[in-house]
Image 1: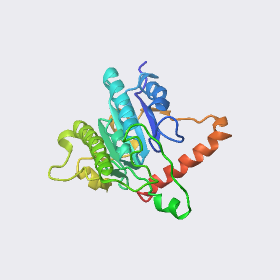
Image 2: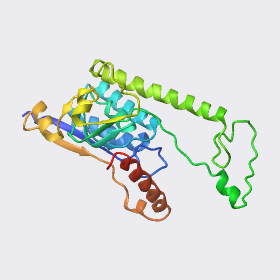
Image 3: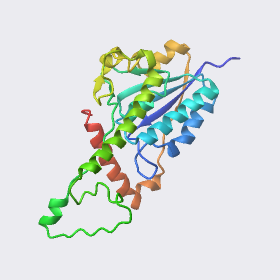
Length: 259
């Protein structure tokens, strides 16, 4: 007896950050989850349920790359469903899917790169604090926040950000191709909402997970959900401070999009 089609639902919720930072989406932490989503129960399709304001471009690339490799190896279609936001690195993850579906109020885009910090040299000077730094290598203290910015260092930083931006643009062009609207600057870091994003080719339509998957795979389609689970003990001790700081950073990232 043939069983109804199975769709693996991979929950990707939160900021994208390197493995040592919690909470956060990263390749090492998600690898077992992604593997199970593509292999367990021989799924007909994989759905990405996305809600991320972005984060690390490297982790975004690694996670999206892993999803694409498994999709191609196992010949399984991938659908992305954006909840509140898939911006910056979150949109990078969405491009790992063959189709991207939005709610009418979903935020997508922000295809750009940002690096922010503080200049504290006047603060420490007013408080009589002397900065002592000894380096081997003239660029070792590049962009030290306790001394004034130097034009050459800012130029270097902008060149680095530009290279990462080009990699992001290449990913979007490779995955969205001819679907992208011509004559529009989609790579300025701007973001769009729902139907406007669809019109620009950043997504394929307005649609929610269950009805869209029933439309594609039949009313009897089954769903298997895969999401991260934090161990109970991770809430205590030194990890508590780390996770609290990460949660504040994540809250600020979502707040950029009014969420």
